[in-house]
Length: 369
Ligand SMILES: Nc1nc2c(ncn2[C@@H]2O[C@H](COP(=O)(O)OP(=O)(O)O)[C@@H](O)[C@H]2O)c(=O)[nH]1
Ligand SMILES: [Mg+2]
Image 1 (tube, rainbow, N blue to C red):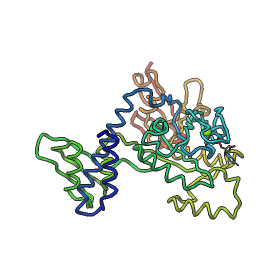
Image 2 (image 1 turned 45 degrees about the horizontal axis):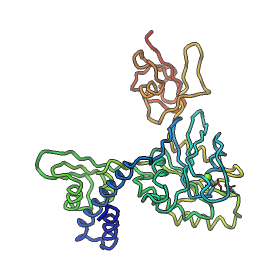
Image 3 (image 1 turned 135 degrees about the horizontal axis):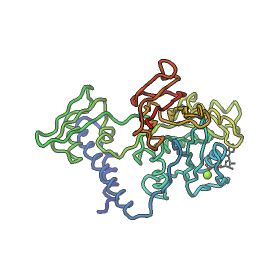
Image 4 (image 1 turned 135 degrees about the vertical axis):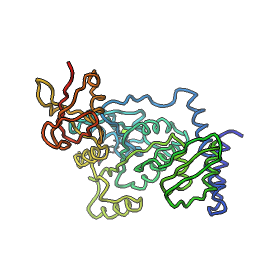
């Protein structure tokens, strides 16, 4: 039997087995098998070569636009960036990845308009696999929905999930240490709903014989497997609802109801019109906030503070991170830094390389000659 047939068979068995205490361990084992067979299949097909885009990541962060064909991704990309992306009213306009650069608050944010996601993309049909590899490499997923097709959201999320992209959640708090002997030992401070037996089954299925396992949160079988496999990516996401120019006030209630049905809070999504360039400021702000970037203004010797082109770093970055991004020989010549602004106790505070910076700090590096 081929791998694909095996996968189908396991999927069928999972869907036909009722979930209860007595079948829990069996389902756990099946799901583990499934995860591994899928991985094997993927490795096989990617070894064939020619797959996957080599989209060069540039700029301070990368955002992937995810949506069905014709919802307005290309139009949005053009409105937000300096890219010249082909726009057309027919389906499958975008055959290749279109990059563009959004300049916002001194940051260069790379926006990738990826080909329309279609059903079955995760299983490798229709070239969708390449699309998903681009999304996996991004820092943020921007869903683009049309006001008339809110229900596509569920399918898009499912496609991403199938391709091991986990949205809006942290990696599971699970650690596993292999040992030489003693079997599998489970420690947890959460009152776990999964029985030890199930957890052990799943681990054994993944090749663990002797190991100390620490589980610090309530997990189900799927999330346990996520914690064992190290090829899941965890990304934040935001939702934009496009073509808002085409609806009347009366229709808004319908859209709100559609959003709620998808588990979305209408207050949390961003209504836009890519074509009429409405709502784009709000969207940019949302992108900025969710990426969690900060601006550091460098005070350069003899040139003063550069407010035009700040150094862009992820929130929580330290002086050391700043030096790494600046490149050159800063780290070797570093003596101390002077920081003014939100992270400083007072102006020109003298700090070491462990100091945590904040948005809109002014940073002056004091270096050895
Ligand atoms: N009325 C209206 N039409 C839009 C808007 N955004 C895109 N369109 C139109 O929708 C069609 C598909 O847009 P396109 O950007 O090619 O969608 P893509 O396939 O997702 O890249 C084009 O005819 C656009 O002019 C919008 O905000 N309002
Ligand atoms: Mg397009």
